[in-house]
Image (tube, rainbow, N blue to C red):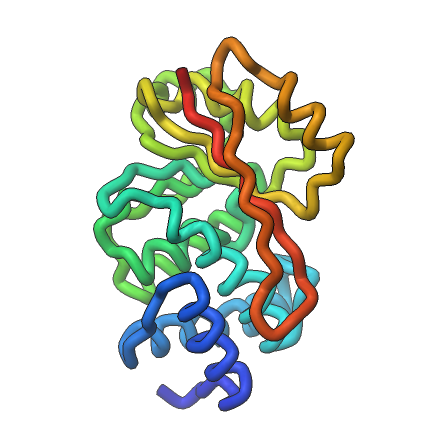
Length: 222
């Protein structure tokens, strides 16, 4: 492979993944390098992400995506809502091939990129769909299929929970990837969707080798 991630950023990816209990082998690292190469190339012509540096992509896309891995069962079906350039669904699929992943995004150029990466990396058991979870056709074809819905794109948590509900199996889980949640936000979480979900588990994270912060919220469908 002609393209090679800078050594410093490769170390960041490998050591950062270890903090989430993930040990990346040579083939997996090559997959992330190829993903990075294609993302940088496509991003020159199509605005897939505002983050354009190698280090930024490794930290705020790759490692951010991997941060939810400890909370996934080994064999899960996942719906990644608003998946953008494939995050977090594709990085999770790369490291855990047993996952069944469906990516959905309303922006066709982003879905085109997702399909390109899936083909380029030879990933199986993953599909990219152009559309919205609000669409009746999407709900009809995908309703009740998933163990997990996952998103880091939704700013409105209540909307994410409402939209996720019909796609989840009984006992399924919503994983919401948010920035820091303050006291006001925690109070809201204690009031939100009590009849549909158990009160969430909240996992605050500070990312390795940076000050980047993330809160992972886990809601279980009742």
